[in-house]
Length: 215
Image (cartoon, rainbow, N blue to C red; front, side, top):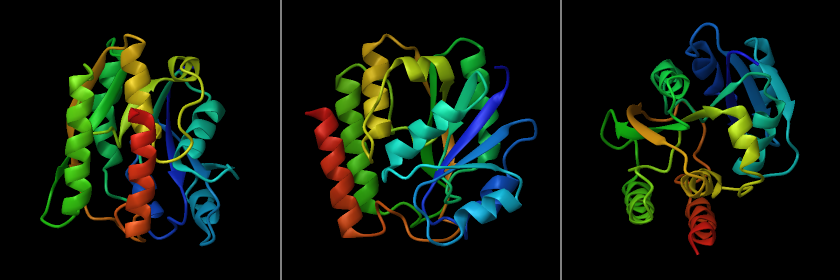
């Protein structure tokens, strides 16, 4: 189980995915989890050489957990397939985990004005502040993250929808994990529309899921 698998949960990311896959560091395995796409995401991923599995249960968390379960390496990295984060920044997080950290997460830093809507950024700050009051040393909810696969599986099932990254941080801290945070660049999407900040409905659903985790 040596090596690193990059799990990329996707729903309708065919436009952005080629750029993301091309930027994955050499030597890392790539596993795209197709979560009900209707735009050919799976075919695009396969054409780029990625392994693809399908997760029929809708939800970000369901897709991530399916990818972790299907991975065949000791270390698993997770990031979005929309091109907003650079896979080239993963080695720093992977290095922290191989050096002894239990969970390495990215703190998003916008690289240009307007790529992170103000309401999404504000909500993230509020939630991260609540996490720090609980003793979780982060300033972001961990859109990019790296951990050991067996440790992730040992946490058990987490929130199946947007609340997954938040519950991961809460449960990891409760389990005594050493959590470290690194700055990462945050860019405009390479294509498609955000499932969270791209609509009021998406933002409302994410807020509902976050509150369910924190309640």
